[in-house]
Image (cartoon, rainbow, N blue to C red; front, top):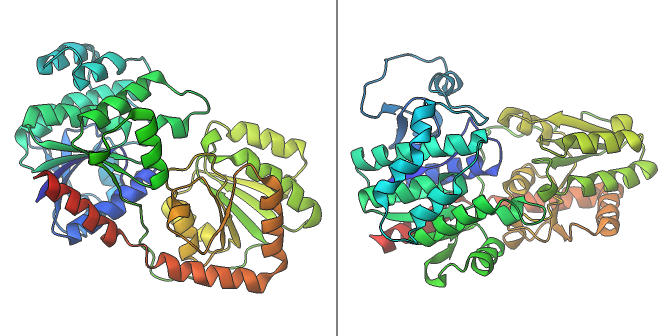
Length: 426
C-alpha cells in the first residue's frame, strides 16, 4: 500500500505539534508496511519517497518531471534549505502562475456547489501564506497525475486544497487529518476563509481523522461531518533521544511552558500563576519556551510585574534545545484554552516530569498520571504547582508514573488504526 501524503511540516522543519505528529505517524506506518510519498511546500518540485523507517530522518528526494542536479549534502538541514523548504511563508512560483490559479482550478468544476469551487472561492488573499498554499495546490495535480499511489492523506487546512485537487485528478480516495481547527486557533470567530476551506476539505474527504474526542466533537458540531466517516486516532509519542540525563541548572524549581505564545495556548494564565508563585518562592524559575503573536504582550506584562529573572523567555527552540530544557525542568504546565491534542505534555512526561494539563485538551483523554485543571482556574493551578514544589517526593513519584504511562502510548498503535481506515477505503 502506498500513500500520497501532503503536509506543511516535517522534521527538521517544525513550528508546532503537526511536524512532530507527522514524523511519528509516518515512521510507524513504514514499520507497518505502508509506503509514503511525502509532499512538502518546497521551492523545487520534489517529493520524498519513504520506503523504510530510517527514511524519515534521511529524507530521500525525488524530482518530479525534470531531473534535478545531483548534489551531496552534509546533513538533512542543508538538503531542505537547498530544496527551498523554509519555516516561514514565501512565494516561489512566478506571479503569472499564481494569477492563473482560479482559471486553473476551473478545469475541475463538476457542479455548482463542488468542494473545489468553494476552496477556489475562499482561497483568496494577498498574504504570503495564501499565495504559498495556492502554489502548493497547483502542484498537487502534477503529483497526482504522475505518481502511483493508492490513497491520499492530507494534514490540516493548509493542505486540504491540494488533497481535493489530487483526488479529482487521480480518482483516488482522500483522508483528511484534522490536528487543529480554526476554532482552536482563533480567539473569537477566526478567519472565514479558513473555516470554509476546512469545511470543504473534510466534506470532500472519504474519511476524516480527528486527534481526540474533543476534536471529533468540535468537528461534528461545527462542520456537520458525517459520523460514518469520522474516526478518532489519538496522537502518540516516541523517544528520539538515546540517554536521559537529568540536570540541575538553577537553585530553585523550574516550571516550563512550551508552545506557541498565542491566545489558544493560554500564556497569560501561565504568567499570572508565575506572578503568584514567585511572591512565595523567590527562587522559582518560570520559563516560557516558544514564540507567537502574544510574545511582546507577555514580555511587557512580565516587566510590569517586575518578575525579572524569575520569568524567562527562550524564543523558538530546536528539537535538541527542547530536550536540553526538559533535562532540568521540574514541572511542566499546559494552560491551553483549546488544545486538540498536545504532544508536548507527552514529551515532558517521558522525561519523568510531572505535568499539569488543561482539562480541555485531547492529551487529557489518554493520560491518567497528570494533574488536570480548567485553564481558567488560576487558584487551583497555583495551589497545584505549590504542592509539587513543596513535596519533592510526590513530584518524583508522579513523574515516574507518568514516564511509565507514556511508554505505552505508541505511534505503532495509532498507525494500525490508520492502516485499518486506509483498508476500509480500498
